[in-house]
Structures are given as C-alpha cells and as structure tokens.
Image (cartoon, rainbow, N blue to C red):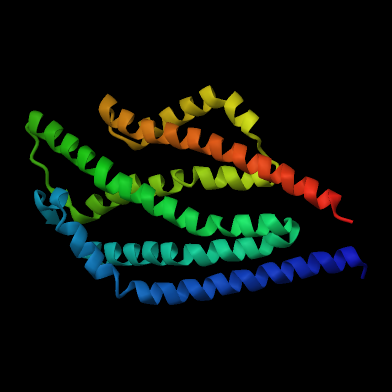
Length: 248
C-alpha cells in the first residue's frame, strides 16, 4: 500500500470520526430540544400575529407533528456550531496557519448571521405578510380558518430560508480564501446576482411589490457587503501566500 493510498484511507477515517461526533452531538441536542420546544411553540402562539388568529388542528396528529418538527429544527440549530467546527477541523490541515485562525472565526459569525436572518424574517417580514394575507382575505370576503400545522409550516418556510440566505458573506469569505472566487468576479456578475436575488425574493414572498422590496433590499445589501468582505479576504489570502513562500 503506497503513501497516497494510506493518505486516502486516513482521510476517510478522519471524515468518519467527525461525522460520528456530529451524529452523537445531534442526538444529545435532540434530547435537549424536547425541553425547549414547548415554551417556544407557546411563545409563537402568543405573538401579536398569532393572537388575532384562531388556531385549529384539522388532524389528530397535527400537534405531535408540529412538536417533533420544532424539536428537529432546534436540534439542527444547536448542532450547527459543532458541525461547522468539525468541517473546519477536517479541511484546516490544507490551509495556511493564519487561514486556520481566520476561518475558525467564521463559525460564530455564521451562527450569528443565521439567527440574524431568522430574526429579520420573523420580526419584520412575517408580520407584514400575515397582515397582507388577512387584508386580502377581508377584501375578498373570505373567512379564514387557520390550521396550526399550516400556520407553522408557512412560518418556517418563510423564515428559515432567510437564515440560510444571510450566510452569503461567510460563504463568500470561505470561497475567496480557497481561491474559488475573487472580488473582481463578484463585481463583474453583480447585475446577474441582483436578478437572481430578485427572483428569490419574488419566490419566497407574496405577489406584491412592497414585500418583494422589503426582501430584495437586505439581500442586495448583503451581496455588496460580501463583495467588500471578499476584497479583504482576497488581500489577506495573497499576503499569507507571499509570507509562506518567503519562509526558508
């Protein structure tokens, strides 16, 4: 068995070990989430948007479905820092020493951006969408009977994508550090990126201009911030590479 084959087997063993760590941590987080899920669901039901609605369970299994779904989502969020750390630990041997320290700081930044995106969607966008839907139903003379399953499904489908979209600066920093993208490329494709963001905004919001603008503006600002961050990361990556080359 040559050195290359040994290296491949070692990488696979390392990957397996880190996946096991993440899986064990997820199980622990899932158990812990059972203590958090009930207060969170009750809090969301007491929110201003939900107070004006009468929640109904159309199926006997709706409450347990919502309960388990929230437990799983909470466990995933709690596990995400560990997953990101294990991912960093797996790829860090291929990075420069300074890059290891910099990329490690991406983990709290990524979690913070995710929570920021969820908070923006829940406290800013979601109330506006609920008001729009209720206003539309009133104008059409429709009496809304809200299912608790449908209500929370709609909420999660609206706010969770924002947590992921707010990861854009971290993804850009990471890809810039790996040399896969450059700030020049991001600036060159800016108009195409804006179009894609506009399509995403139209896809995840009701069909009215105001809500699409509310979504599109922060996404475009995130893209501009990502370009600025990419410039900083690009310069630091070049500097780190030059310093490594100058070492004896």
